[in-house]
Image (cartoon, rainbow, N blue to C red; front, side):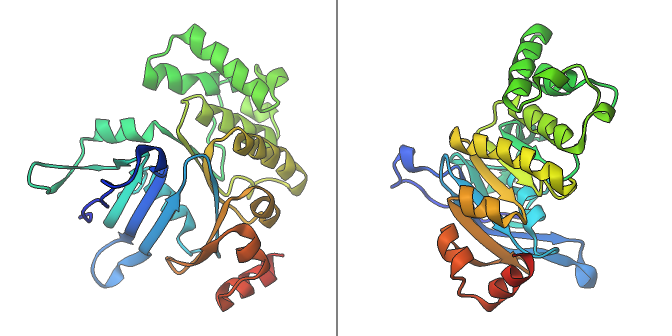
Length: 273
């Protein structure tokens, strides 16, 4: 397992450091002839306060890229910086990279919120308890303070009246909004969304996208894997199209979605629009 030398940023003013800077990221699962090369040298830069939408067919590497951005997967090669900090590794005095201790990696990951396709709520906890749990267990916040913050976040996602409901008593859209509130409870610098509406019935998609639009307006830096082209067109600052583990085309949504230059992207859009 290796990672390339971190990109130099000595000449970059601190105010211009991107929230995410991924360079030459590779991810290989397995070894030898049966190895699966999922990411093949992905570069991605996400400015602070921006929304990047990642599009692509199933199996293109989108979800794996997200999991590498918050270290749920260890990259095989390349580098990932979040807010200027190299993830997963440190340089020694000779410039050699060493893997960080798992506790340090967990601390880095705590700065990054992630919302999955499935909600992964604790079924035996109420909505408020689900949101309050991580700040108590991970950050050492008092239960009273965590519950106050959880109540504020549930109100933000439109679920103040569902605080005492259990996941089984909530619709899929409501559960996903609880999951978003839970991620926000850790006060992340960056939010990652992995197809957050794909498991929802069509009539429930809008309520989740509305919450995400509100987050975008508040200045939260977001990377969103989705097939919701309307969301990409209206909310994204930057659109990335991936296929077969590489970035095929990227740019402003108007250019990428309305006038794509790559045939593979043109074909993809013809199917999803």
